[in-house]
Length: 275
Image: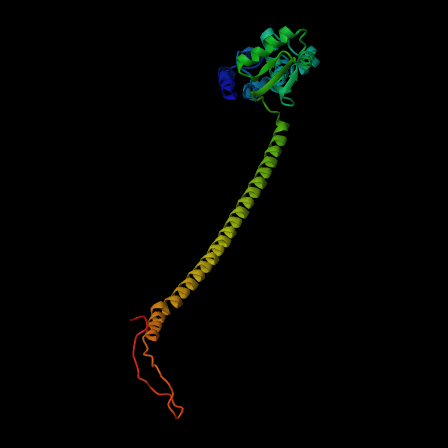
């Protein structure tokens, strides 16, 4: 059940409050407290005719009871029971439902023993029936852990808020807003630092790649120079020189004459390697 739906179910009583005067407001309040599905009462408590009649002796006890349904618990009712109207079974069950909601604000795990003592329920069977009824009413979402004898609460409807609780609620919201802003600023700073680091890493990578490219170009240039030098001294030149040396003519000298000079017998030309 949403808070909107329970407020919607209160609308017929708000319409009646516009026409009901004086002590008749006592019955109006009692009927609203017993109405199925009505668990939020602040609008009724603030209705002009109800407020005006709240100080009347006939209405004041009912208005005090209405405030307990607004902000209190079954234990609060027991403490003031002598000054308050007697609850019928439907009203009693409803106030106990609201009491469980209030208890769940401090702990999402409620022991059976705590609930039995707080709600004045003598046995486990009756307690579990009451809790199951809150599930069906949509007041509480949770589950029963029968082995561990505890109620595990997930979510609950919202109850009416005391006027003095509004300041604490507003302060809590402001604190939450401040904390959220600080967290967002921290996240923004981390994102900015990460982007800056990424940018620096990218620059370093580009510089590294440029240096690698320069080394590659240098190696290619040296290789090209070596190839040019090697091709400038052709092996065909050395081969031609050897061939010319092998084809030079040779002179054959004979015996010396009387004057001691060699007597030239003649010259025969021939080529090495030819017959």
